[in-house]
Length: 293
Image 1 (cartoon, rainbow, N blue to C red):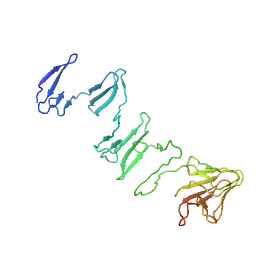
Image 2: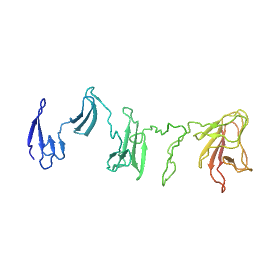
Image 3: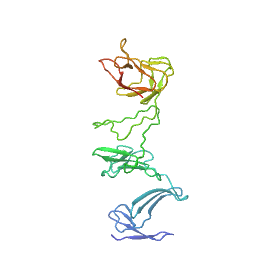
Image 4: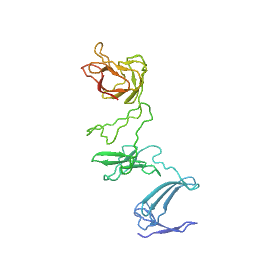
């Protein structure tokens, strides 16, 4: 198709406007416009500016690296923020049936990340998601999964839970390397030298206790089925955990194998919370291990 007219723009060179009477397509830089507006050039430049003095949307093509979309302030010659769906809606990449605020669908092999988030100028400080072992996703802190960088997952909400769920896990937790319990918890309502019928638990596994005088614990509240805690005596006094033997069946009691456990200085015990050991009974803490330095 040949151009049917030319327009002279004052202050600019001549631009050929190609208009197809049949398809009503406009071509700039091409005699064969394939879309309602078709801008073509092989030069590594910006093809389109949309906006005003304080903000422009720039669209261009780079010869070796694909196309570019950038938000730009021509007055200060600095980049600006680029907003997608500012007033709501979803963004889809590789799909036209978005099911989330950002929905990415890609067909990639094990070496190509589905999503990569990388901090500039910090070496391997990055996190990426990629398919691994068929239907699983791998999350790592380095682009190649090596380098020894740490991956930290946390919540700003005190006491918040981190839950990992799998419909058919091979292992609940499969760990290569060491597991370190860095932050000790606190047994709330614990009184040194007293009879503690119900001490509370913070969100931790390891609970260091420093009794000065002989102290007793008969119950521990905050148990959840399957929760494991470690109580360790760092103090000079003795800490006794009372075995529940008779009386009213009350939750959060201690079933310690028929006798009390006395934690002398520098000894510890591991307890497991199990619900409904007996029909109709509440949960109990049971002893699964005691050790001494």
